[in-house]
Length: 239
Ligand code: APR
Image 1: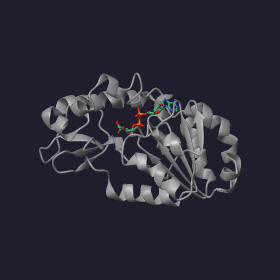
Image 2: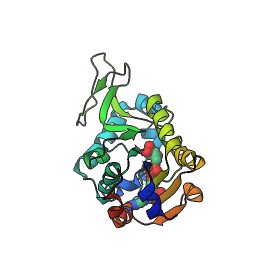
Image 3: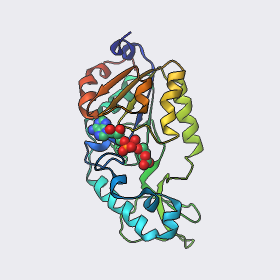
Image 4: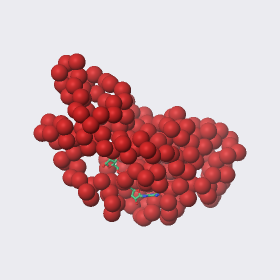
């Protein structure tokens, strides 16, 4: 059965996205040639130790990233993924991205595995704070420093979010893996869980990744262009 048939018949779909989906919105990826980890060392900016060593540097770097993201708009990939949510009877978007562009494009059923750059919390007491755009390091009422509410290297993901992600991956009949290098755990395990449950795996990426070895369909190209070509499949839905 080809992908058109499977999409038409499919009821339960999960989509796993990575920074490649936001690349066409002008947001840098992490591991590509111009990726963030090519210019900066993650252990200096995206770990709790880095924040304890130099909270102003880490806060300032996230503030710089917020400045880029604030100017970014959802691209065609985000909008088609929003159409997919309306199309499938049972849909879950599982994203590693922290930019909030999926929600801006209209998706509602979203699991933000790595948090959201627009949310903040106290590094000391965990008190949550909303959006803050400021170069200057901020303090909590308790005296602790505020940090972006994102998952840093060495930190665990939100347990409930992760459990739901694995549950949805296990139940899926169709799993799209879009714009991720598939190297960061536990997100990278999700397509394998779907595969084990017999789901049809569709990967969209500029290049092959470890996940390509289990993909039933590998679509080479930009997420925005590849998804626009499939858009009409998601417009008249069984959803
Ligand atoms: N269309 C489709 N794929 C693209 C595009 C595009 N326009 N541009 C880049 N890609 C692909 C790249 O080929 C690569 O496979 O997107 C992937 C981006 O990989 P990474 O930069 O590693 O980003 P990601 O997979 O999201 O990283 C996962 O690592 O640093 C942590 O927390 C961070 O959530 C991030 C996680």
